[in-house]
Length: 79
Image 1 (cartoon, rainbow, N blue to C red):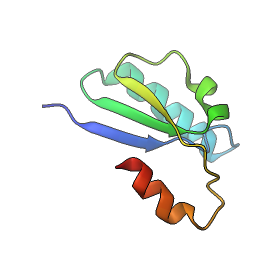
Image 2 (image 1 turned 90 degrees about the vertical axis):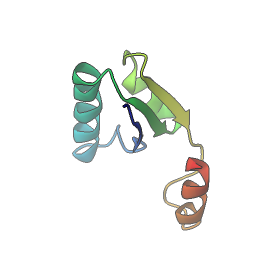
Image 3 (image 1 turned 135 degrees about the vertical axis):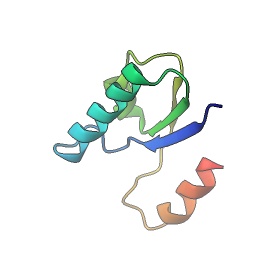
Image 4 (image 1 turned 180 degrees about the vertical axis):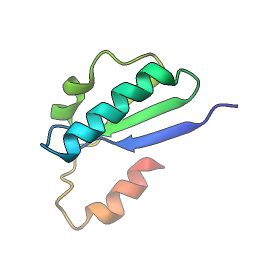
């Protein structure tokens, strides 16, 4: 049975945590073709994660993650 996994990659272009996010996503693309992944990103980050397998899809989230309202809006977006 496969799972649907959502990963917030909005900070994938940052130094430090962004390196870990990119490495994790690319490693999952190599080893896991069974589960379905939705990567939540801003428009700018989407191009940095190109070339992933078909079980990965991008969901563009255009709000800033610095806005306090994001703590309400982001969970609503995920539904």
